Image (cartoon, rainbow, N blue to C red; front, top):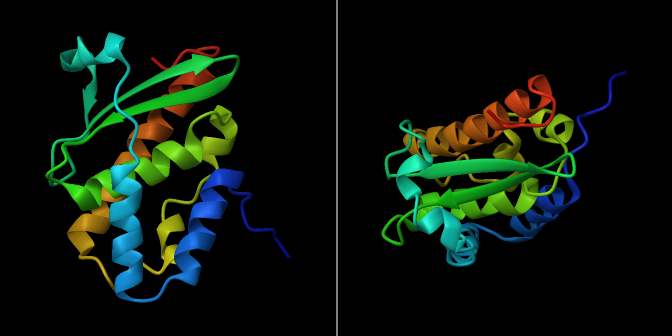
Length: 151
């Protein structure tokens, strides 16, 4: 018997929040998370053009990662006009920021299925969530391969 991958604590807490919600409440919770996406620090606001796009998303999403004391720091920028995508970004930023590259790489691509979003959101929107996770994982992979630097 193999154990399921260990999810980062904060990501597991988000999944549990969604598990308690039902139907439309899940969408409202997703929008709430989107409102809580932290703004970019000033140093990145001035150089947003140097952030990496996530082209697979329906809305413009830009990402940046840094490594601090062996832990990933993620910064995501999503317009207010894309509340669902902002929600995804906020969940991933909250759930993965401060984790080791190994922990980030261990997050299953379809972790969101435990949140009960599969039947509520279109396949295209779920692809966006997978794309953001893939971008964050690519930074973690690069950090692991480059001795602690995300690229």
